[in-house]
Length: 360
Ligand SMILES: *Cc1c(COP(=O)(O)O)cnc(C)c1O
Image: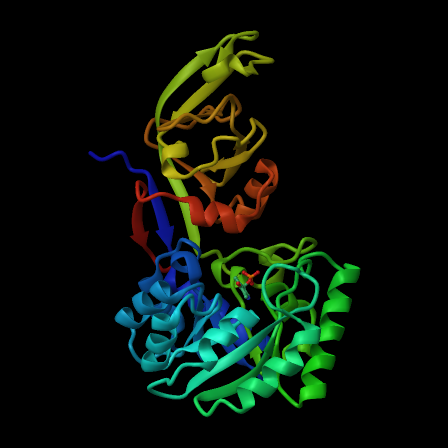
């Protein structure tokens, strides 16, 4: 017998969600963001599942691009953070990658190079997120320099939204106005739509959309669930019950004795902990489900185990599976209870849970 802790991944659901993005943005190229091991789903599996429905893929940096091309050599790959040195620019050109240029320092590096092949380039503009990108005022000079560079195939302007998950955040309107006006003034296409903007702002799909989280089964919008948006669940994290303890009213459970039973409580001990990537700071009201019925954590998450209140579930037995997120409990709900976002939950699952590929 094995421990039985498992992360079920569903390729058909990934493909369904990619097809949904395509359907919502029918006139744009759809680039599926697969950085960070496809948000923890497994790069090869995600790429193979989505390749038939998307136009290309987005990764954060060159090593991820190379890893992707080793899996599937014939796909278009966009490198979101661009190149870090001369060698990477040459390699990007050789491999036929699409690269994001995000600073004047990168431009200076690029402009003195003789590239082996022409290089497709998006210029990233900082429209208000203030993380990466050129200020709008520097774009003019950059575009002129690039237009004189015989190796560059200029694709357009790109920007990233800081608050697209929140309805009607004023920064979003400002960012959208800036990027669309800049693109228009240079006569270039633009790309600004992450998952949230893809759903919320069809008028800003333009030539290329960049969905991420919606492909991975979680809602990109603060006010609407994945299910309501027609997004399919792509992963389910489960582990079996390995023991029960009876905790009398007033006694505590687990490290720090932080959770105290308010009634005589039956507690199930489950084979999942922060060593598997479940957040240690998940509080005792965090939802879980057993056989489709919801309950909550009781007590602190340990490295290899955690504890769940099953007082109102007299029929559960050793070996029954507890769902931490998936069909009954959404990753978004768990994330909210833990003060984080679904993205982080997906990225943090360690190699310990056994990966099981299942289509239903
Ligand atoms: C990760 C990323 C995306 C996807 O964002 P989601 O919120 O996951 O849809 C889009 N664009 C850039 C530049 C990114 O880094």
